[in-house]
Length: 374
Image (tube, rainbow, N blue to C red):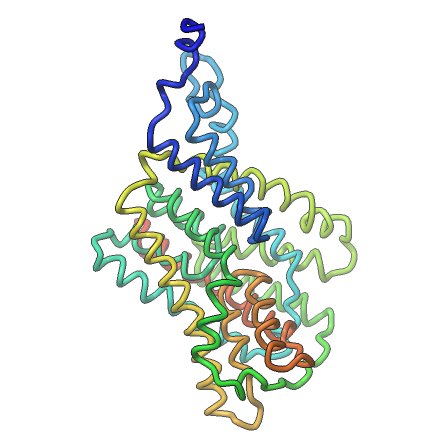
């Protein structure tokens, strides 16, 4: 029996591993029992467990002609920048750009919600991070996991794990983080504002919008062209009406498979000795601050627009949807609006700044990469 125990890798288990097991269990609890982004948190939690168990042959490098471990190859989807654009393909196929086209001024709400990234970049530099690291950390404020991974992989691969987990954690906690900020910055009267019904957007308008945004985005920020291209391709497949099978695949099979692999690969980078550091705690703190500032930026922009044009007011709650958590932040705006007025339907209005935020985050990331990755 003693010999058998010696054969087991128990002696390889460290206190840091045990702490990471607890973190993985917390993520599973949030996903399974609280319903916070289970499609993301369950694969991430399992990746955390794999990374902090004395496994053999899971992540090892190929040596002497022998193949590497399974996740050595799957993780290439991140390092070779395959997974984030594929996620954007699915997001584009799942998104309706009609509300943004019908009410173009909501583009300003999506732009204002990028405030958190700008403030966070400065704060991260002041806290001792390099400009490359600060730019990667700031993307957490946009609540866009694929863009955070995409940017970190180019600018600060050493921080990929804490940045990715922070981004996805705050995406999953949108229903907890955003409502207190929304209520603090708006009055009951503002939350009860009913917006005018959106006009119906024609198919040619939607298709032309995809093409224009794709061309403009590639010309303005070519470093983010793969994200913008796949986002618009996914939406074009959705709206053109002749590629239903491809649109269905992008909305379901492709994004589901990629989400599993992406989540596990993010989790598997979270080894205890690298994750449980003061630097990681700084990133987690900066990330939630960035997310809060981004939420506030969209709300305050809506209030400013109402001052300028009081005859056609915007419910400030939809400004919080300017972060890129599609469609969760739009749903939160809808729920908060109906807390005050059960017959007030804000979801479609909130989708305008929501998809604008997706585009805006990709543009900001492209700008950072263009400026710093030289």
